[in-house]
Image (cartoon, rainbow, N blue to C red; front, side):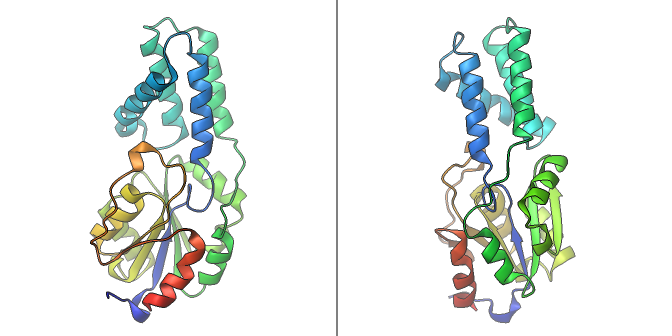
Length: 236
């Protein structure tokens, strides 16, 4: 079995839906969006059109609430062939602002796991999305003091992890990335040479889904974040 012994020096953690709830608020907002446009299209069709818009717009707006809100507006214009009332646009904008104010609900096992690892390893929060929103959520979570560094990036690629773990650790080979997204947290971290630990969340955005790399010797999957300490001890 591939082991790291004392060579592991840095652990990266995803934020949204790894340390605190996030996707559930997007789902509630999407339900509100489909209700606003119920006269124009069925909910499933609207969700499909919205997802298509989100994918198209990632390269323009990046990840986060602002891009999501603009994609909702774009979808509303498209499905109504430009006849969407200004009042509906105003409600969509209001829904986006509410997303930016949603409360922070720290997930089970997050705090105690971080507290147990802090001081033993270099702890790095690696998250993507809107800068202001991610900073707000970290501040309200009360977890910020447990990290040695915070990286808010535009996207998560193998190059991203190589650079982050070079800055805040001893390179990707001596680092581990923990998160709920196979596509963003696990696969690119493995490609960079790090360990990739998948902690599934019950709700995962379609864009973040990917097949698990079961054959990769550095891939692990946990039922919840509370199992991370045991994993590290077992591999050590």
